[in-house]
Amino acid sequence: MPDQISAMVEPTIAAIDPGAKLDDPSVELASRRTGMSFQRTRLSAERTMMGVVRTSLSMISFGFTIFSFFGQLQERHMLKRANAPRHFGMALIILGVGILTVGIVYHLAFMRELRNERQALADEGLIRAQTAYPVSYTLIVAVLLLLFGLTAIADMVFDVGPFT
Image (cartoon, rainbow, N blue to C red):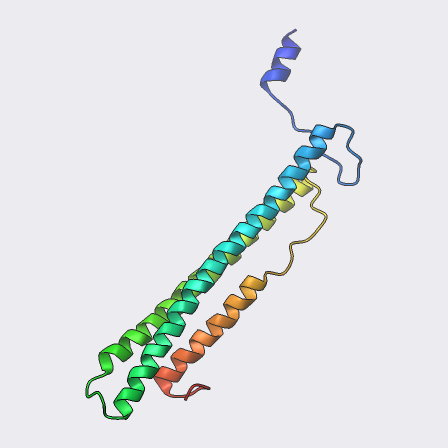
């Protein structure tokens, strides 16, 4: 009787052999649910990164538009002092690039930790984890947008680049 009580108090987790067919359907289903939860978490991180990209794109494009619009008005001598709006446009671009940089760094750290946790559970045999995570196209777009933003800043500060 005491052995039954200690067995109820201290549950044990049996490792699942990754290649074995599980006899208990509830263990198989739990393993699959856990594996799918990693996919849902990964997709949630992708959606968060898309929000960062969307915000940064808005700030960078709006800042560049303000900078260019007031620059043209100043060149046509329609405005005498257009430095404040142009500085505001540059500040928006710098802020957009900064937000994007922080978002990329956070995304990379989060995904690395998620992969490590998934691998640890797979090594213990608690999930199968037979497929690798796919390439993050959102991260690729974010890096391209970051390069675009840095190019826009270089164009404004040094008057070099594809936008001159």
